[in-house]
Amino acid sequence: MNAIRNQKLVRMFLENAKKMVKEDGEIHISHKSCGFFLAWDLETLASNYGLSLIKEVKFRLNDYPGYSTKFGYGGDKNFDCQPSKTYKFGLKKKEEN
Image (cartoon, rainbow, N blue to C red; front, side):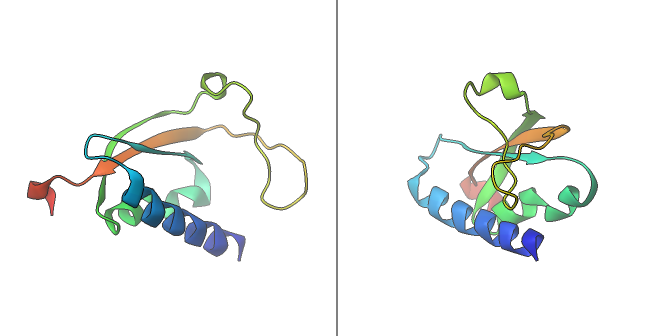
């Protein structure tokens, strides 16, 4: 249901972001890193679009001034975004393909 729609949204994002990222650029996705969220397997999703994981770091809300979490459903309600990570992807190098 919602997880499937959200995964589709991530796939569509990756497909389009890949067209815009430069050879040395990065695509960042911040995502919860516990429970069923781990089953999303962002690294595999990204790999399907010719991207590879460069680095993953702990998500720190203070690094994003003005950002606030919002449920995809439920109007204007916030949610606890911890634990979360920011996954940094880049174009696969020739030798990775």
